[in-house]
Structures are given as structure tokens and as C-alpha cells.
Amino acid sequence: MVIDSHHHVWHYTPEDYGWIGDDMAAIRRDFLPADLSATLDEAGVDGAISVQARQTVQETTWLLDLARSCPRIRGVVGWVPLCDPGVTGVLERLSESPALRGVRHVVQDEPDEAFMLRPDFNRGMDALRRFDLVYDVLVFERQLPAALQCVDRHPDQRFVVDHIAKPRIREGLLEPWAGRMRELARRPNVWCKLSGMVTEADYRCWTVDQLRPYLTTVLDGFGPERLLFGSDWPVCLVACPYGRWLGIVRDAIASLSRPEQAAILGGNAARVYGLEDRG
View 1 (cartoon, rainbow, N blue to C red):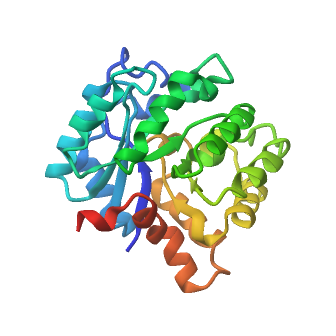
View 2: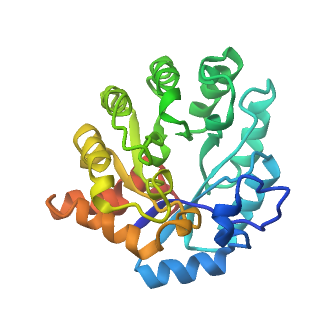
View 3: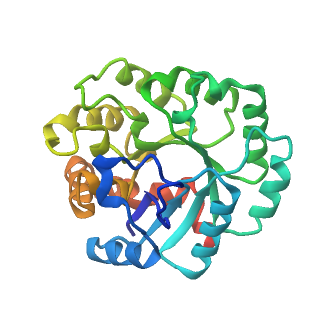
């Protein structure tokens, strides 16, 4: 079974998605479950995890509703106000849906590079364990030191790094990202998604050779037991068709055993997000 560990759906409006600039005009439209299902069918992908694209509880509720009606959405990584003293009550309500499998905050947009070390954020992180939820880490490489400290404060929490922590592929810089990711990979409670790489490169002239050192770094660091295939669809479409990215990941892991490839392409996502629990 192939599981895409990272996709988005949205009703597009310029106000809600101001981060979609002119160079990303191709995705300034709605992307809904019917579009997702058609894309997965064409690529031979069985299911996907829907990840928040707006920081509102309303969006999380909407995604959970979609998961009830769209069987291809196997789980949801939503947003909750982790810094709010009342976050536990929000989690109690949202966790009534078995589709809620994780939580994400868009830390990459926080001006404070030490945001993940805030006491209120960490109190919210403590609440996730009660509901057996993953925390998805969305950071730029410069925010990795704080992310590492946060992970060390929560050794029993499952973390999944989105988009291999957004290295500076466009500039061709491997360090200090590679060293920081190797250090993060030493923590057994941290997984990493093979996603979002083409949009950290030049949209129009990236090459597989340019991506290869970054793929090799996370393959060596996390190993096949803690890596997950993810597309970042539809964001990936500004640089790469869905099927091509899946093909690049398949080629990158082709030297592994079949069970190891199967783990990266779906088994690890099912395990870390507890998708088996949903039946």
C-alpha cells in the first residue's frame, strides 16, 4: 500500500492563501477531494494524509469532515492553538474524530527563531501525548537548533519533520543543514518526510542531481525505518508533476530491499500516524 504522507486541499482565496505568489500562479485555484482522488488514481497511490494549510481550528474541522466522506484521506494533521491555555479542550473536541492523527504549527513563519522553546508552546506540546498525536515539524534549516532542543524536551512525543526541514537547495548549500539533520536523526522519536524538495530548488531548472545530496543525507541519517514518502501536492505542481516526484523517490530508494521500500512508500506513515487504528 502506497500512502502519501503530505498533501493539502483548499478552497482558494487570495486573502487566505497570500503566500501563493505570482511565481506559484498555477495553484491559485481550488484543490478538493475529487482532484486528490484523480491524482492518486493516476499515480497508483492508495491514500494520503491531509495537512493543514491555514492556522485555524475551522480548517481542521473542515479537513476532518472531508476525511469522513473521502476514503482516500486516511488521516489529518490539523492545527490547534498550542500556545493557548485552553488547547486541551480543543484537542478533546477534535479528537472525537479518529481521523485526527497529528498537529502542525507553521513555525517557519514565526519571526522568533526560538519559537519552539516558548514555555506556552511546550505546554501545548505536552498535551499531544494524552491524545496520541504526532507533531509535524515545519521549519527552515536555520530553525533546526531550536527544533532539536524542543525534541529533547519531549522524548516520548512522536515528531515528523516536513519537507526535510527546507534546506537551501536553490543556493546549493548542504551545510549547516546536513549536520543538523544528522544530529536530529539520532533521536529515535523523529521521522522525516521525503517531500517539499523541488519547491526549495529553482522551480524551472532544478535537476535530480541537485537533489541527490539532500536525499542521501536523510536516507543515511534516518534510514528506511523512519522516512516517509510525501508529495506536498498541490504545492509541488509549481515545480514538478505528482507522478514525477513519486518516480524520483522510487528511484532514490531502488537499492533498498522491497520491505524497506514498502516502509518508506506507506508502511512508515501507517505506523507513525497510527493509520492501522482506523481500520
